[in-house]
Amino acid sequence: MAKPAISLAAGLIALGLPVFLFAQRYTSPSTDTSITIAGKKIHVSYYAPSMHGRKIMGGLVPYNEVWCTGANYATQIDTEADLDMGGLKMPKGSYSIWSLPTAKEWTLIINKQIGQFHLDYNARQDFGRVKMNVKTLPSPVETFTIKLAQNGDKNGTLSLLWENTEASEPFTVLR
Image (cartoon, rainbow, N blue to C red; front, side, top):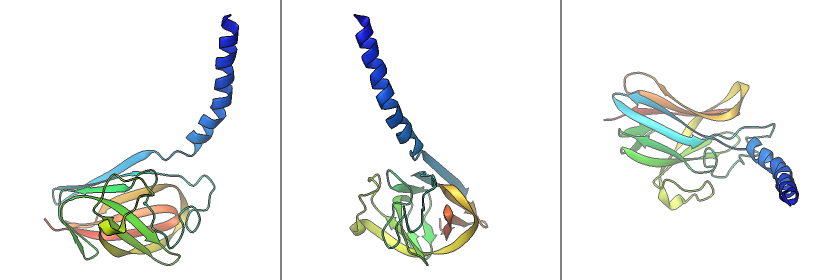
């Protein structure tokens, strides 16, 4: 009598395993990066998708549409300091980061709402927008990466890297 139950379990595993493996192949793990500048911590948490042979810029990440700057849930920046992000004065706190890529330029969007699903962008919650610096990378970056770097006592750079693109925005810690 136990044989049919074992056969049923084995069959379900055999049918479910390919689906599970396919889903695992395209997961976007959560990751984060942080930096301390002028004694103040700046932390970014996001989900990092990978290329997996796909066309990213102008493909998976369409041009002229707001992108969640990662996957799954909106990328979040938490800052202990007031920041000047490309002329946008951000009080310390938590924000979501979105971006608007085009073939020639990117816009960084700082949004007051946090924790939303990656398709739930609400432009009415925008704190502000700034143009980003964009350059072509010499070799592709397989997994979407956000970097924070210090450039002097109170200055830093937020960089978004994926495929052959790097979009970056300098910032200053105000207090």
